[in-house]
Image (tube, rainbow, N blue to C red):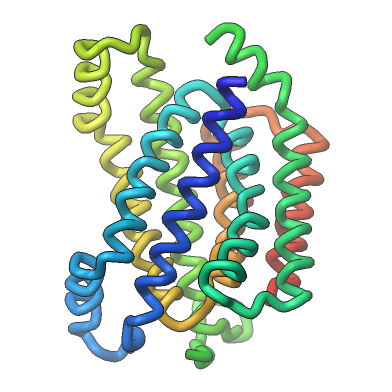
Length: 271
């Protein structure tokens, strides 16, 4: 029950934070990558917009819940369950922001969430044992890819966000595994845990990577809908699963693999 409440709170705070960020970026005049001063303008805008500040505050709460979750559970379990919030994201975007969520977008979001659910169910026993034990974009050339393939500005920013976010997830997971769980919820123990977190090079590097992911993501929100952008970042989960297998040596079961394939399919057909 505690695990369920933790993950449910994590998903809800993530969705609410994203919704408020999207609402704030609706008023942003646009992201012109040819202007070298746009980053400073974006940072100033982020630090002065009340919607974005509210979203950031909620996302900080979500981050603390996330760090708690990955200190108790496998990264390959937490991330896909977290991804199931995409359906809630679409509902909130439609109900609160008034976004036009197309039928294809609902289908792809549902497929992504089904994939997330498959991955999560494949490791439900792990969670129980741990609990028991404790603007329409122009095309940009990618010359480093074969045949000079092109990719839209939106998808390029989403790829940067996803790779950075996945790298941050892995660094945070390794850092929190090294730090371990808090033994007793007392003020001295909490202070000790906070000091360990803010002085860990792995945690600091992970947060830096997620900072890059954050600015890439909110840049996307200045020209596209949250109901499109957030499910598209499910690429993060595919990259993170690979990292969980190769770096964290976590077990990727067959059911989990099928879940990852569904997530990939949902991203592929996402519009």
